[in-house]
Image 1 (cartoon, rainbow, N blue to C red):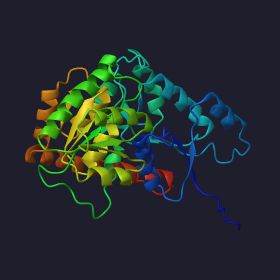
Image 2 (image 1 turned 90 degrees about the horizontal axis):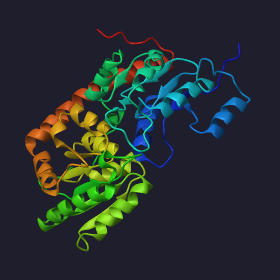
Image 3 (image 1 turned 60 degrees about the horizontal axis):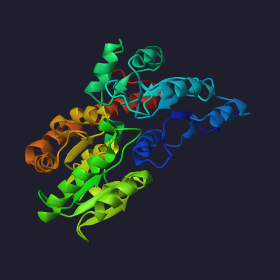
Length: 355
């Protein structure tokens, strides 16, 4: 008998490989979960879809599993369309872990959501083996349209710093800042936010703190450069992080992380670094509430410099840090259970039965 030695393959629907560390972190979690697996990316472009249609080798497509790793994908019409296209790549079992749900309360200038969009996701979500979400707001939004979902946290919480990194002692280390956003933000005025963050940063520098601008996406570099240029010479450094390992090296020694980028906050929490989130869209609050830090999530169109300065002091206190670490540990336990179920299904082994 001839043994089939073809490599196992999985369809992957996400935004990895486009220079955004948050999306790459989500792919890293799945890649760690399924070692030795070939990932076939679902195309987002018309040309890419044509490529799927013209692909000559169709073996395994009908049974190939799909993993949705798109972060805040549910509730967006563009992601729903790409999910339909994914059948051209992977027609087998469908999986997701800790997905984010777009809140229709936010209507951005480039938004793909709307007041009735989420209801259109009932049928697509019914095709997934289980529906688990990032945070409590995501679960509540799905409940409103009749979809049951379990909160397990953001999958990137499963990533941890390399051994040997030294965490900052209480009250020490630079203050990390990560500025940048996706398609739009509350108030539609990022320059106003930058002015407020700059004023807060001047207060931190006056109090003897250094600033470390951590860049997760090349499009964010301009914001870091603007902040650094507005501060005293030598008080601010810029660190570009391409991998999660580089991010953990840059952030683990910091006193706190002030994050507009969602996954800068997620990965900082995974490293045990106190987080203050600048909520540019509701998904930021969804995550912060999942780790017990809703009071440290400040909307970008409402935050004031003094409030931001106070939030950093509060975030670095022993009680908020303990609360965050406890919630992260609980979510990691739930995530590990979910990814074990996913791996067993994809790898064709018996699935765990949860009590």
